[in-house]
Amino acid sequence: MIITNNLSKRYGDQTALENLNLNIKEGDIYCLLGANGAGKTTTINLLLGFIEPSSGSAFINQLSVHENLKATKRFLAYIPENLMLYPSLSAMENLEYFSGIAGKKLSSQQLKDFLEEAGLQSEAFQKRISNFSKGMRQKVGIAIALAKDAKVLLLDEPTSGLDPKASNEFGLLLQKLRTKGVATLMATHDLFRAKEVATHIGIMKDGQLKQQFVTKDLSLQQLEEAYLNTMKYKELAS
Image (tube, rainbow, N blue to C red; front, side, top):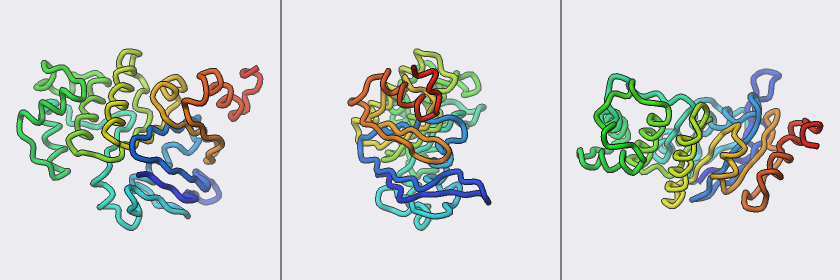
Protein backbone atom coordinates (compact mmCIF):
# COMPACT_ATOMS: atom_id res chain seq x y z
CA MET A 1 0.00 0.00 0.00
CA ILE A 2 2.92 2.34 0.68
CA ILE A 3 6.10 1.97 -1.36
CA THR A 4 9.08 4.28 -1.62
CA ASN A 5 11.99 3.70 -3.98
CA ASN A 6 15.18 5.63 -3.16
CA LEU A 7 13.01 8.54 -2.09
CA SER A 8 15.13 11.62 -1.40
CA LYS A 9 14.63 15.27 -0.56
CA ARG A 10 17.32 17.93 -0.59
CA TYR A 11 17.22 21.65 0.18
CA GLY A 12 20.31 23.09 -1.43
CA ASP A 13 23.27 21.42 0.25
CA GLN A 14 21.13 19.98 3.04
CA THR A 15 19.73 16.46 2.70
CA ALA A 16 16.46 15.98 4.58
CA LEU A 17 15.86 12.43 3.28
CA GLU A 18 18.23 10.09 1.49
CA ASN A 19 17.30 6.99 -0.53
CA LEU A 20 14.40 5.81 1.61
CA ASN A 21 13.01 2.39 0.70
CA LEU A 22 9.79 1.23 2.36
CA ASN A 23 7.24 -1.44 1.54
CA ILE A 24 4.24 -1.25 3.88
CA LYS A 25 1.48 -3.76 3.16
CA GLU A 26 -2.19 -4.00 4.06
CA GLY A 27 -2.63 -4.37 7.80
CA ASP A 28 0.94 -3.28 8.61
CA ILE A 29 1.59 -0.64 11.25
CA TYR A 30 5.04 0.78 10.55
CA CYS A 31 6.54 3.16 13.11
CA LEU A 32 9.38 5.48 12.18
CA LEU A 33 11.47 6.35 15.22
CA GLY A 34 14.00 9.18 15.31
CA ALA A 35 14.92 12.51 16.79
CA ASN A 36 13.77 15.85 15.37
CA GLY A 37 15.30 16.34 11.94
CA ALA A 38 15.68 12.60 11.30
CA GLY A 39 13.47 12.74 8.20
CA LYS A 40 10.21 11.35 9.60
CA THR A 41 7.99 14.32 8.85
CA THR A 42 9.68 14.85 5.49
CA THR A 43 8.73 11.28 4.58
CA ILE A 44 5.09 11.88 5.47
CA ASN A 45 5.00 15.21 3.63
CA LEU A 46 6.35 13.54 0.50
CA LEU A 47 3.71 10.80 0.70
CA LEU A 48 1.02 13.45 1.10
CA GLY A 49 2.35 15.36 -1.90
CA PHE A 50 2.95 18.47 0.19
CA ILE A 51 6.50 18.65 -1.17
CA GLU A 52 8.17 17.30 -4.31
CA PRO A 53 10.97 14.72 -4.09
CA SER A 54 14.45 15.60 -5.31
CA SER A 55 14.78 12.04 -6.61
CA GLY A 56 13.19 8.65 -6.21
CA SER A 57 9.50 7.79 -6.15
CA ALA A 58 6.59 7.11 -3.81
CA PHE A 59 3.45 5.04 -4.39
CA ILE A 60 0.12 4.77 -2.58
CA ASN A 61 -1.95 1.74 -3.57
CA GLN A 62 0.28 1.30 -6.66
CA LEU A 63 -0.31 4.88 -7.81
CA SER A 64 2.57 7.35 -8.09
CA VAL A 65 2.03 10.11 -5.55
CA HIS A 66 3.55 12.80 -7.71
CA GLU A 67 1.98 11.69 -10.98
CA ASN A 68 -1.48 10.87 -9.60
CA LEU A 69 -1.71 13.05 -6.50
CA LYS A 70 -5.47 13.62 -6.65
CA ALA A 71 -6.13 9.90 -7.10
CA THR A 72 -3.89 8.86 -4.22
CA LYS A 73 -5.66 11.25 -1.84
CA ARG A 74 -8.80 9.12 -2.17
CA PHE A 75 -7.03 6.35 -0.29
CA LEU A 76 -5.34 8.51 2.38
CA ALA A 77 -6.17 9.81 5.82
CA TYR A 78 -3.73 12.03 7.70
CA ILE A 79 -3.60 12.83 11.41
CA PRO A 80 -0.86 15.31 12.40
CA GLU A 81 0.36 16.09 15.90
CA ASN A 82 -2.23 18.85 16.21
CA LEU A 83 -5.31 17.86 14.25
CA MET A 84 -6.97 20.85 12.61
CA LEU A 85 -10.74 20.67 13.04
CA TYR A 86 -13.31 23.47 13.08
CA PRO A 87 -13.53 24.50 16.76
CA SER A 88 -16.96 26.11 16.50
CA LEU A 89 -18.49 22.97 14.97
CA SER A 90 -19.51 19.83 16.82
CA ALA A 91 -17.92 16.42 16.34
CA MET A 92 -20.91 15.42 14.17
CA GLU A 93 -20.63 18.58 12.06
CA ASN A 94 -16.88 18.18 11.57
CA LEU A 95 -17.30 14.56 10.54
CA GLU A 96 -20.11 15.46 8.15
CA TYR A 97 -18.05 18.26 6.60
CA PHE A 98 -14.84 16.29 6.07
CA SER A 99 -16.74 13.24 4.85
CA GLY A 100 -18.48 15.47 2.33
CA ILE A 101 -15.12 16.71 1.04
CA ALA A 102 -14.22 13.05 0.48
CA GLY A 103 -17.42 12.56 -1.50
CA LYS A 104 -19.27 10.67 1.24
CA LYS A 105 -22.84 11.73 2.04
CA LEU A 106 -23.65 10.15 5.39
CA SER A 107 -26.85 9.97 7.37
CA SER A 108 -27.03 11.18 10.95
CA GLN A 109 -26.99 7.57 12.17
CA GLN A 110 -23.93 6.76 10.06
CA LEU A 111 -22.10 9.76 11.51
CA LYS A 112 -22.92 8.57 15.02
CA ASP A 113 -21.84 5.02 14.19
CA PHE A 114 -18.42 6.16 12.96
CA LEU A 115 -17.86 8.38 16.01
CA GLU A 116 -18.87 5.54 18.29
CA GLU A 117 -16.57 3.11 16.46
CA ALA A 118 -13.73 5.60 16.92
CA GLY A 119 -14.32 5.49 20.67
CA LEU A 120 -15.93 8.89 21.23
CA GLN A 121 -18.56 8.96 23.98
CA SER A 122 -22.08 9.64 22.68
CA GLU A 123 -22.56 12.66 24.96
CA ALA A 124 -19.71 14.39 23.08
CA PHE A 125 -21.17 13.97 19.59
CA GLN A 126 -22.98 17.33 19.62
CA LYS A 127 -20.37 19.25 21.61
CA ARG A 128 -18.10 21.84 20.02
CA ILE A 129 -14.59 20.70 19.19
CA SER A 130 -13.24 23.72 21.08
CA ASN A 131 -14.20 21.89 24.29
CA PHE A 132 -12.42 18.67 23.33
CA SER A 133 -9.19 17.28 24.72
CA LYS A 134 -6.48 16.30 22.26
CA GLY A 135 -7.40 12.64 22.70
CA MET A 136 -11.03 13.36 21.81
CA ARG A 137 -9.98 15.30 18.72
CA GLN A 138 -7.81 12.38 17.63
CA LYS A 139 -10.86 10.12 17.89
CA VAL A 140 -12.74 12.43 15.56
CA GLY A 141 -9.78 12.13 13.18
CA ILE A 142 -10.05 8.34 13.31
CA ALA A 143 -13.80 8.62 12.67
CA ILE A 144 -13.04 10.69 9.57
CA ALA A 145 -10.62 7.98 8.38
CA LEU A 146 -13.26 5.31 9.00
CA ALA A 147 -15.95 7.28 7.19
CA LYS A 148 -13.64 7.91 4.25
CA ASP A 149 -12.83 4.18 4.13
CA ALA A 150 -9.15 5.12 3.97
CA LYS A 151 -6.73 2.37 2.96
CA VAL A 152 -3.63 4.24 4.18
CA LEU A 153 -3.24 6.18 7.41
CA LEU A 154 -0.36 8.63 7.89
CA LEU A 155 0.33 9.80 11.44
CA ASP A 156 2.83 12.42 12.59
CA GLU A 157 3.42 12.27 16.37
CA PRO A 158 -0.27 11.54 17.06
CA THR A 159 0.26 10.55 20.71
CA SER A 160 2.45 13.51 21.66
CA GLY A 161 0.86 15.25 24.64
CA LEU A 162 -1.68 12.50 25.30
CA ASP A 163 -2.01 11.08 28.79
CA PRO A 164 -1.31 7.34 29.17
CA LYS A 165 -5.01 6.39 29.03
CA ALA A 166 -5.67 8.39 25.86
CA SER A 167 -2.46 7.10 24.29
CA ASN A 168 -3.48 3.53 25.04
CA GLU A 169 -6.95 4.12 23.58
CA PHE A 170 -5.37 5.53 20.43
CA GLY A 171 -3.21 2.42 20.11
CA LEU A 172 -6.30 0.22 20.37
CA LEU A 173 -7.95 2.23 17.59
CA LEU A 174 -4.93 1.62 15.36
CA GLN A 175 -5.24 -2.11 16.01
CA LYS A 176 -8.91 -1.92 15.01
CA LEU A 177 -7.95 -0.24 11.74
CA ARG A 178 -5.33 -2.91 11.20
CA THR A 179 -8.03 -5.61 11.28
CA LYS A 180 -9.71 -3.70 8.44
CA GLY A 181 -6.53 -3.96 6.36
CA VAL A 182 -5.49 -0.31 6.75
CA ALA A 183 -1.76 0.28 6.21
CA THR A 184 -0.42 2.75 8.78
CA LEU A 185 2.79 4.77 8.81
CA MET A 186 3.40 6.58 12.09
CA ALA A 187 6.24 8.97 12.91
CA THR A 188 6.90 9.02 16.64
CA HIS A 189 9.42 9.58 19.41
CA ASP A 190 7.62 7.11 21.67
CA LEU A 191 9.54 3.81 21.79
CA PHE A 192 7.06 2.20 24.19
CA ARG A 193 4.03 3.00 22.05
CA ALA A 194 5.85 1.91 18.90
CA LYS A 195 6.64 -1.45 20.50
CA GLU A 196 3.04 -1.80 21.67
CA VAL A 197 1.26 -1.08 18.38
CA ALA A 198 3.68 -1.56 15.46
CA THR A 199 4.18 -4.62 13.30
CA HIS A 200 7.40 -3.09 11.96
CA ILE A 201 9.76 -0.40 13.25
CA GLY A 202 12.37 1.66 11.46
CA ILE A 203 14.97 3.87 13.10
CA MET A 204 15.96 7.04 11.24
CA LYS A 205 18.86 9.42 11.71
CA ASP A 206 20.06 12.33 9.57
CA GLY A 207 17.57 11.54 6.82
CA GLN A 208 18.56 7.88 6.53
CA LEU A 209 16.76 4.70 7.55
CA LYS A 210 19.42 3.05 9.67
CA GLN A 211 17.69 -0.10 10.95
CA GLN A 212 14.42 -1.98 10.45
CA PHE A 213 12.79 -4.60 12.67
CA VAL A 214 9.82 -6.92 12.78
CA THR A 215 8.47 -5.84 16.16
CA LYS A 216 7.65 -9.29 17.49
CA ASP A 217 11.29 -10.29 17.08
CA LEU A 218 12.64 -7.91 19.74
CA SER A 219 11.90 -6.83 23.29
CA LEU A 220 11.40 -3.26 24.43
CA GLN A 221 14.87 -3.34 25.97
CA GLN A 222 16.40 -4.53 22.69
CA LEU A 223 14.54 -1.79 20.82
CA GLU A 224 15.78 0.82 23.26
CA GLU A 225 19.36 -0.40 22.95
CA ALA A 226 19.15 -0.40 19.15
CA TYR A 227 17.73 3.12 19.19
CA LEU A 228 20.33 4.49 21.57
CA ASN A 229 23.18 2.84 19.68
CA THR A 230 21.90 4.27 16.42
CA MET A 231 21.72 7.70 18.00
CA LYS A 232 25.30 7.17 19.25
CA TYR A 233 24.29 7.47 22.89
CA LYS A 234 26.44 4.49 23.75
CA GLU A 235 27.08 5.58 27.28
CA LEU A 236 23.33 5.54 27.96
CA ALA A 237 22.85 2.13 26.40
CA SER A 238 25.53 0.47 28.53
